[in-house]
Length: 404
Image (tube, rainbow, N blue to C red):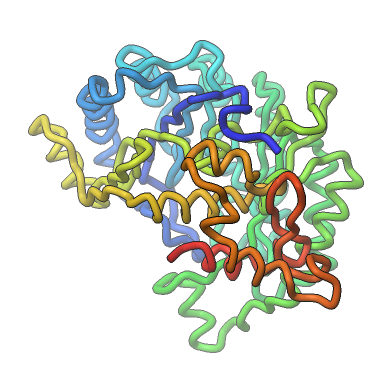
């Protein structure tokens, strides 16, 4: 098993920029994002540039190996404004020349010229929020694109020079059938994306989707059916040449992959999160973590802009994490990885053995079947511990056991 120190981005830091604007709010979304605030776009970009400058000294020791522009829908901003943000980052922070630079994009908000401009600005990875290749499902989700527009956006991104493309898909929707999910997977795999992120739908409170379910307009999602869809995805993606490296993420296999390391096309930015590494988050509601302290920004874009115009950070909360909390978070995040958490990595980080800290939890989660370790939620071997196939379906139950 690889540790963070074994990963190519050793001691690397991630940079996250949050763009909280959308063309329209999706029915399932509870992210900090807003539609109808076009009048704030230019001021927000200036505020983000100010925050980059304000944070430069505190993060002067950091070498940023990844940049991730998320939202919201970052591509509602003109490419010229996104290019200004990246230029400010390179001017004030130590961004590696070969950094992975990702942008999230809604297929309904990009055309060929936009994609060419984004690639020219130094963005080398794009994550398309496809979600489904079924028009009825897209309408249920409130997406602004249809299936053909999603396919066209993918092809345009390839033409524009993107050789690292992720597709986001959602499964477990109300009324979704295994057959329709299979068709979405077949359509996605036919495109041969470099990476796939597949997420089970979570019905969030106070969203239009939650209201429709509460009123009986739509049925509750079926957890057992969602589990069947997940297992189908595991089978289909494995057969199609994709390596499952995190609960919800698969990377296309390449000749550069090694048996023990992460896939070369794995999302390097998210690997920093899953290894509980350091990251700087900028913008509305963004979080930062320096290895001991977690900071969250204000969620109101107007208040955030006002703070930046006054030359002060827009901090909402700041929390120093105890050793016990940091251990628990390493377990919760590390167990999302298919390879799990190794005995060696845990002890190198905290100076105490994993077995010593979590003996009871490990034994309880592994010994569920008639033969030790065979039917439990954890697999324990000489390398460390990892989720079993069944454990991947019940991951939240496992994670909760390690957070005291």
